Amino acid sequence: MNKKKIIEKIHEKKSFLCVGLDPDLDKFPSFILNEEDPIFFFNKKIIDSTKDYCVSYKVNLAFYEKYGLKGINSLKKTIDYIPDDFFVIADAKRGDILNTSKMYADAFYNNFNFDAVTLSPYMGGDCVMPFMREGKWSIVLIATSNPTADDFQMIKTEKGTPLFMEVLNRAKSWGNSENMMFVVGGTRPDVIKEIRENAKDFFLLIPGLGSQGGELSKIVKNGFNDKIGILVNCSRSILYAGKGADFFIDSQKEAKRIQKEMSKYLTNF
Image (tube, rainbow, N blue to C red; front, side, top):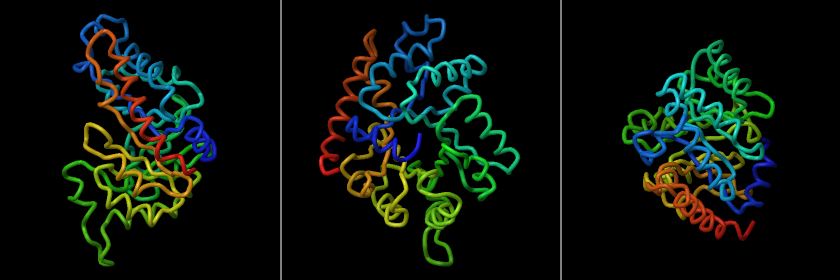
């Protein structure tokens, strides 16, 4: 899905919501565990109940790999079930030497048909370039909101700028706003602002809304550009909004609530 199409879908649905599909059997309503494929059953219900309110799904590979071959099979069935007009992200955080990254890219793009992959740029451009393919997106980790992110990301370089900004500036030279996005945690509005000022035309993938404490108003204020330019991910607060047999109805209500709030910020576009 190209940039123009993503923006069109945002306007069409009045939403820039990305729903994270992070299935955790320990958090499922107990009756689901009796299903032949609990993960796919759960994901199918979530997709059916949220697809009217989001434009993207982000699939965290760890929540599938944990369950071995069964999890991978559930992953493939999930990806195949998501309608074609959604931007589908492999949240894999890959980053390795050139030939290994090529194998990763082949796996995610050819076997699973993801639109995008999240990437850790620590090893430099070699680990990102194999993912730069026509019609696909590299989503580079820049500034995250986990508790120990400051161990490296906020270290001051000789230029006096934080390391994450050096990573951002270098990453911009590997691609462009038509094939590269950047990840910045939604709990860091000041960092979102700094990154937006230095990456004006790029889309930002912003996790952290909901359970992690990110506030939509601050995310929008600091993250929007003149084309909107953000996808905001929400996982747990949607997935596990309900615990009973009709859990998906509560998930739908939460996705709809977020979409309604997002629509208010899109009136000027």
